[in-house]
Image (cartoon, rainbow, N blue to C red; front, side, top):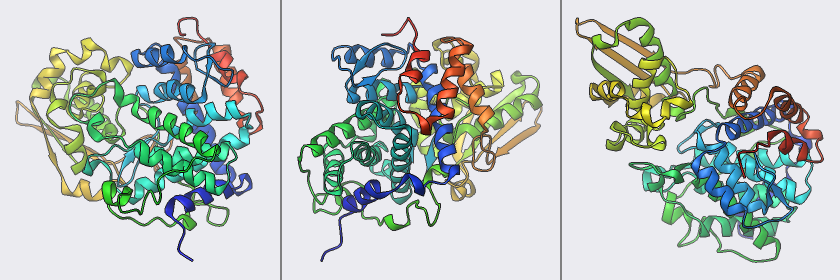
Length: 459
């Protein structure tokens, strides 16, 4: 008998993992990532791409799934898309860097939309989220996509299809077909994150999750997909990544307790995760330099990935929020100017700030092979200032809050949510949201989550 395809082995994992296999640490981690995602959602209320997605969703009324901030109910696909854009818009949600970067919480809003539509319990929702994280992060560890011109959300195609199959209670055969359809039919190009970035940078992951739900819906009705989607002559290995191995038997389970979600990283700044340590270095230097006019040059030493992705030509004169929050020189300039990175750091007037432009004009970026060697286990950056006096100040940061070494606490996530929520919902509503998530595994109905997050200005 031939060995099962990778899609079949992933489907088997998704169908057979039990809620009893999850240690309390994993369930607690899911709750934290859920609160973190809700904070990002609240911070994205009113954003232009969010409004566009809501406008599309309003054209299809169904009682299935809710859209945050509104009283709209629509299809799980359209709710997953709109809510997913909210999670991703600020670049403030969690992340993970293997051979490929990515944001595993991009699947949380899609899992929630489908759980609501399917009448799934909170425990079933938690299980689906764990499955999505596990598969996406293991794929990120296995092979790079960006170096070959493909976007990391292609791994969401697989992870979310498996999670959707679990929430829909599909069997192994149907789950395999969901993965086959989702992956083969919806490959995304890396151009979404190259050069001057558009609105779609924050929408690509939500679109992948939407497509995965659609693929699982087709598989539920016995539609088959191209196979073997990974190993075939025209499959994923040969056309996209090159061949890689994935030992699904060693995925997180009751025996090993090695669940990938425990390795995901969270953010203290609403910006690209790989440049967080450069921001911390900039903040450190700001306190030491005194007069920013005294800076003659700024030199940033970083990993090969950061130099290639975060310091390409478009990043030296960003014109959009999406480009600015992925610009290494811009974020260091703002850290030096403001001592922080906030949502306001990417306002049009801040992006066009002559002071920031002047600092970027005096900035150079180079790869440090030692930092590349540490990457991705440590996402280090070194910033060096040469002053007009000849004095040299340098700050190297290899880690920071939100890392595995210094993870954010429950209190940190609560503060993040309340900060993002304050302009939109009152303290009592915030308390209701936090109380809902605190008992997530016991929930049977999701309306007590959506109701306190309702605002009059959306929808």
